[in-house]
Image 1 (cartoon, rainbow, N blue to C red):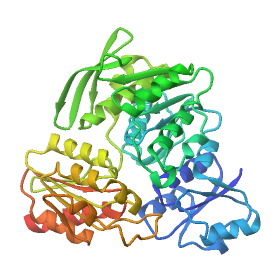
Image 2: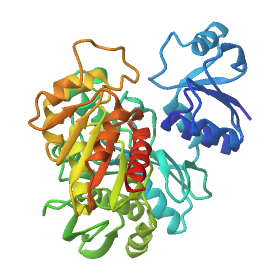
Image 3: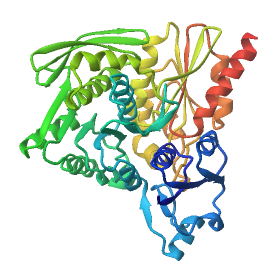
Image 4: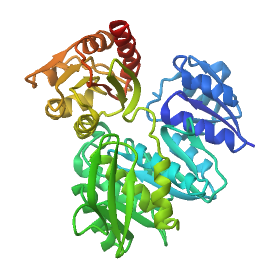
Length: 452
């Protein structure tokens, strides 16, 4: 048994690693800046946790696990370095937790959390009992982590800092490739090359599953095939190996036929949104590639009930549905609004919290266009996350480019304002990768006050 200390273990990705290391029988401690429900859950599971970064409490014998979000000046990290303790990245700890299993790495600029959750839930329902690490709670498991008895380990592979190159996958999924995390990569071309490096991690007998509908992913598939990597593509076009046909969008679910290797399989996608049809097809291909019978995998996908913060219904009051979502890239925001449109009988109203000053600066015009798809859009102050404030970058870069966007600095005030405009049949969505998730409860409470 080894000891591990995780700095920032309240985060979605780090908490999953803590649970997995604990399940593997290791001694696990962790800290985060402030108390949270995640820390409480880890404590109940058996992880020794505390809020605030206290270098005196870091076990001297522990391997210290960090993410890119942890700054070099963090007092716990500084103490570990003074002592000469081993320090590893979160992705390296995840790889340790997966040792000895067939690694399924699910990557992409968008959709990797949902696709990984779909694959995990479906393979579990199919009797495979996979282990998994997903950067959000998988409904039905009430966790983003699970150590199963099967041979598969499904992981959401994060490209944001290049750490997805620390894995050795047998199956790799790429849902799409778009410019993002330019603070790390510097250019769209560098993002593309990182995914090429990711695909090259597949060893003999490995398979790349790539979306043919996405230009970046399709380009990767062509290059991988040219380099002799076994590649399966999916999408709506005739060039896709697994072709999506007979698509029907209906409220909170959809149905499709997948034509793959001259056989057609009907699939019901139990969550709304055209983009989730692609995610479900990728998850289905993971199971089929791993050896699950086609119709079995299709039936098993019905077990998926969603993941936390991905079109996550937080309440319905007076016929108004309140949804929370992690979307933080313009493409994701546009897809989310279309997803909400699919289930709304009234209007779609959004309160959006931009994530990172660098991303806001790079994509302000694109965010404005995406938010224009809503009937009402309010933008709050930027969530800084790991970045220092940039006085030249504010949310007004987005709203100034919109005809009907409103800027409200305080996110709780923005939520109450959105609720005050709501009518029966509307869908109200809190959007962003930061603290905006708490505003969903503010909106629900305001609606309850209104509808008393």
